[in-house]
Image 1 (cartoon, each protein chain N blue to C red):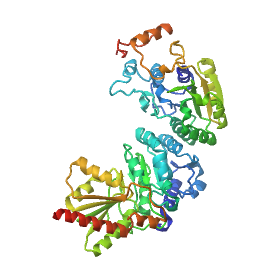
Image 2 (cartoon, each protein chain N blue to C red):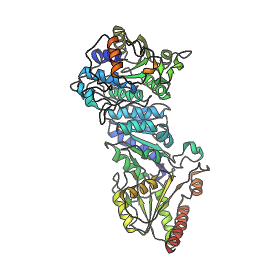
Image 3 (cartoon, rainbow over the protein chains, first blue to last red):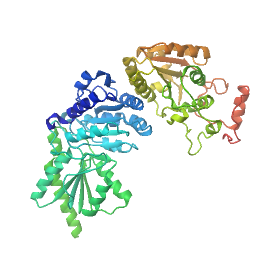
Image 4 (tube, each protein chain N blue to C red):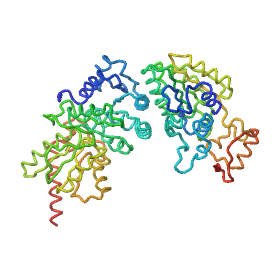
Length: 320
Length: 250
């Protein structure tokens, strides 16, 4: 499944689900093929709607279908889902609470040479401000599957953020319990914790191996549900760690890191230093996916280097 | 607009005001959500809520504010206020009814000013492509928008022609003539494979001479004094009383 990539996994899983459940509808803004929904549209034409290149209408129409009791999965590229149609999301999925599952394809930097027009680096920031919206960013293809299964019949609106290219690394080699809103401990809690979501989680895991070679013991928490956050996990981390790093393939402004800072602030929990690492406030230089991850220090090596540097700064500040 | 709503709710819409969540009902969506007062008055007259409830309009904590907020038990099927969104939502419901094999219809009222929004035309094209005969748009073409005349559709661009070009069954009517309105809705009901756009030419503020085609009344406050003048012009109707500040007296 790792070779399939996130989009094909989405399309294939949804086709399987919909084949067994006539209440599922896939709606697309002319990106059915890019969503891996080719087979879906051929095999289940009555359950497939293409509204044309019209994301605002896609979200509105999806909401109307959800109102009629269908399980509606609407998909398009991340910036078009989260920003072009953001007001439709706010009115239909937020204000009216219609439980549409909005699937953002190719979020983060994964659209590579298509450039900043197609990147999803602000989507979490925008979607986080819609009350009642659940935001999930699965870490690998197994988790995409589990998320989709969890979304069928889930009565809340969801923004599902797919990152990563077709060679998305595998994180889960054995089965595990996936629950919306409950983070996954990929290591036990350690003095240094990296919190991440989406395919960046895999890079964080590899970064911890590099860090271990430098005698820095770091752990990883997969916060696949960005909203609502797993508060129990965050409380545990605040109590048991010396430094928290939030690593994300998203602008630092408004992303997972912001959400975590806001949580600790509102809960008045005293916690160790929290260091945010993501995309700076600029449009990024474009290249292939690996190049951009490297440029933005979001590959394993970049993350490890960033953590080591910032730990040095934290330690020397403490010593002063 | 209120003549259209009154005709729709009294003689066309399949609904049960005393059983607002009845599963087989038709659905009305006020996409031009700012015209909410006429809509609330009609819902009240139909029996969806009491005069006391109506009198809570724009009071703190009320369900009835300056734009519709979805609440099925009050007959309010959709939240609106951000223009250009009602048609897509209504289209989704109409499509869902068709997929469920239900004989139900969706009516969406838009303004001609609202038709400046691009999202209207996204949805118009898709609804025509899908052949949603159970979807009817009513365009209240009063010729005005917030800042004055709607010049977009006053010259070369003819609103009814645009809907026609988008593949809709277009019926142009005098939006104040009850019989003409009724005929248009019946025509729409018998058109099964194409959505219908009823382009209703209306006069803003119709019936009250000092308000007619006067855009000062696009958004304004009816004080007790103005209310008296309105009543005089309208020849006295049985309406809720206002106190001196213009607030309804409960």
